[in-house]
Image (tube, one colour):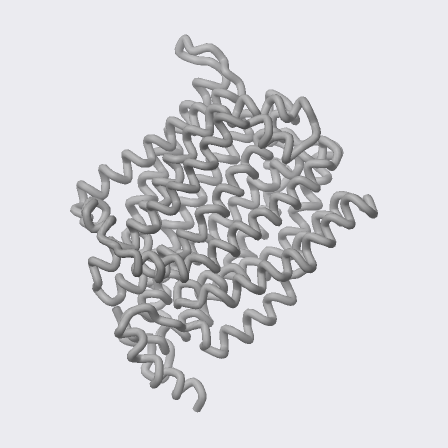
Length: 469
């Protein structure tokens, strides 16, 4: 690793090389996953708009599960990337073990709800009985995939934080191919298998999740990757270790859970809109995943590149990298938005939107296209702060603005004023510009760099002295 990307001058070449090496495979992996979700929606679309809407609402339940475990992913990336920078193998294995255990607990809870109480889940998200019935048949099967999906995400977290991003990427290629092929077989019935409709999509997703886990294990074993197979090291942590881990994870966990609940309230509000809006939201969420897929590459890269420098005692390099990551990310998201909007007509049409639902989908893409450049800038700054050890600042901002500004505006516009769907949707992003300004002030202060390693802590006095001068 370069001791500094510039003595007094930032060196772009090694920075972009390191960024690309991590961001591109992760972005490609997420793009594959999102493309698979989009193809799922397209393959279900011939069954009707109600099926598309039900699939979208089930995806929102999966997103809530994502919010439940992502706090532990953020904490795990923080510790693993800093220990990776410090060359501490025991710290890496210990951190992965605690991350894996916490994530799997969340997966078991959500998997159980999907399998044993799918009707209750669907009633929360929509009052449309026809959509509820379709969603129940999907959740009862896909609930079995949740544990495997979260397990593979835990392994991917470890691999990405130690700069082995190709393994989860290749595993995603294999699992997506399996998912698409089995969708064709199970949804419509081929090779003597009866057509299963939306239940077939759920079964294909479950099979693909199992393939993903097995492929990661096989590739890691074949490449001689040691951290994944040192099982004893995963559980060699003390109560004191877990306390330190949980203290760092807790703000991130609160952030993800409370924001996840807030997003659920938003989706419940949108789920009470007319059926054509529900279908448009389902399609929009799938396309939104394409943008987030691009962003996720930068997010993981920032966590590794910044966290690694902080852990190895190079806070000045971490600081310089963080500033550039924010603006590069915004530029990439803007480009991705423009590409998506250029092809929106055939995509929305192919995903069964027409007439009023098509118009609603276009409005959502326009609003999101303008808001997401700032939104992703906030997101990557928060992830950068977390990797550097500051899990509190961005968390407090996001939670406060969500519950003090965003949710009241969404609920009042949807249930009290009964404004058009596009006005309700616009309220979802009303806080982003304000938070961006506050996050930028924090970025340039350097106060977000809080190492957990000895080398990192030893370098801080000199860094803070330079920053003040």
